[in-house]
Image 1 (cartoon, rainbow, N blue to C red):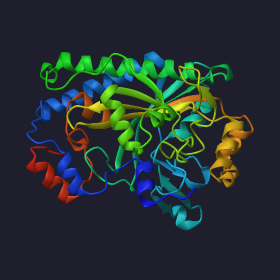
Image 2: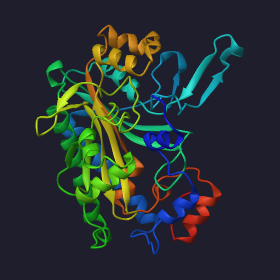
Image 3: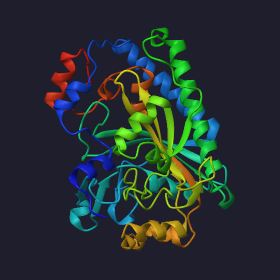
Image 4: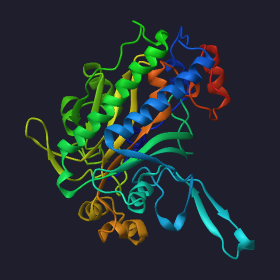
Length: 379
């Protein structure tokens, strides 16, 4: 598959492309509903609610998570299949280079979590949740993409009989229930957040396959398809991200060694589709744009790992201990995902920019642009 630069940008996801575009996107006449101190109180109130209720709904326990990993472990996430987003790597000399370590800052904890399930002795139906921090240096920094990443990264042990679409949908619905409850919770604590200017989240998600969305909008690129479908359904879970669609491209590039996007499934109408993974997207009424909250899925087993690595020409990954553990059936079958903390808080607190709820680095041009529009990023 040969991708043009434009197609790569569309499939890659993060970033808009230019600050001229961002200036048009940032809302005019914006004023935060909460001041800076109220915002901090709301952030931690929402975080506590989500962590407690996510653990209750999915039977998870909070555990610690690494910020750095050994390169040789193979557990760091590459995020995509073309190697375009690389982790920060550094040398730890340790004992005057007698026992050095080549380390990487994590980009996500997807693979680490599956190994951790085994280490913590998790049984089917049990899982873990982390307050994960990461750095993704290859993002274009805009209103909702930061080099600093914070997620509720969770993982849960499942049985072979649970590797099906209905189980995935039930899990996603439980997560959505927590997010809707979190919105009600912060609005009760901070009534200014409940306003006719911005509608509340719908009670239920709409589930659609990436293949169905392409059928609905065959002439539109991926991001525009998502924008259009969110006009009809303000909150959707798009199933099967990573599988190559009839137009010759995946809905979005997705790594081959964690989510299962190759397994055949069925649409609600009984039509053959693919994938046991997906993303939660919503319509953000403040920015008036598509807004991704979570990426998750049933993880690969030995069979689907090998098939996906073959399709993406990455069979050399099988040399890594992590991949060998899956092939040898040493790691438990699992389902898991990441829920963007700052993305979620930005939505719940009706903010126009990610920097209003998390401290990170932003280019001078973006900070000046935000200041002119009454958007005050944290520094």
